[in-house]
Amino acid sequence: MEAVDRDALNLLSMQVILHAGNARDYVFQAVGKASDRDFSESEDLMKLASQEITRAHKSQTETLQKEAEGITIPYSPLFGHAQDTLMTVMSEINLMKEIIKIYQKIGGEQNG
Image (tube, rainbow, N blue to C red; front, top):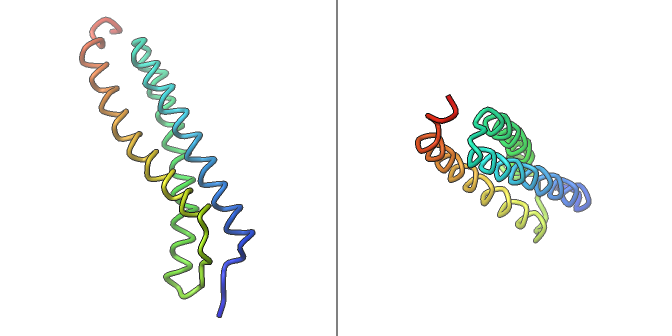
């Protein structure tokens, strides 16, 4: 039976964590810019966050597709952590989008 190599899974897990972490950094920077009424920079940072979370999600999805194809994925606490990190950051992105909208409503008229 075909299986994913544990070292390859660990590397993939670290890539998911890295890209999700990058996305988290960008989204919190974006909220900071929005609080300063720099909505253009906030939007640019949210785009970067979106690119990073997409990369993380793609890696995770490709791994899960392998399992669906019958390829064995070894149990890995690191991969579980990577998935938790990914889903948490995805939720944070959704929440921060709403916070940015609030900043735009309460401060947008001063920025043009």
